[in-house]
Figure 1: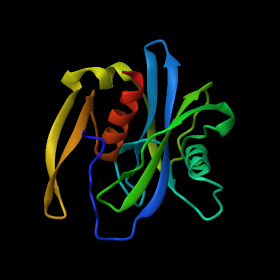
Figure 2: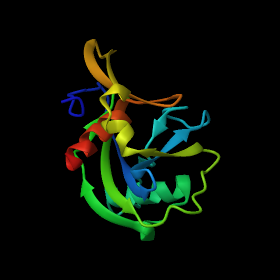
Figure 3: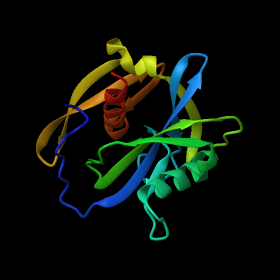
Length: 174
């Protein structure tokens, strides 16, 4: 399974959490994703779910995901309905990422934080269900080849941990 890889970076892992926001749109169920700026510390210019590194003041990883989502795109936890925690995954950049799926009641007035987010994307789930939008490439991490999923959405490539999380999330809607 592409979403469950045994990547073991030779570094201590940093705990992080992301929100997998699901929104009912005129195009059906869609995911809210972000295009990260070139100014962020990690994963510059990549498409990602809103979220980030856990802080000592966070009561839980769910709190991390919702706090970071509010900081990045202005979506408050009060507009979310918790659905499920997905399995954590480890990235080659030494993050242990825990994704949380939630339905979004109201996505109006989302505002990207210009220091972190270049734009907010709403991508229909049908894009990720269409096999013609998925390709798998091999990447070498720590002297071992791993399959990495890449989804194509217009001019965008959604890949890596985000692609793995999407594959994991799609297991919910089989």
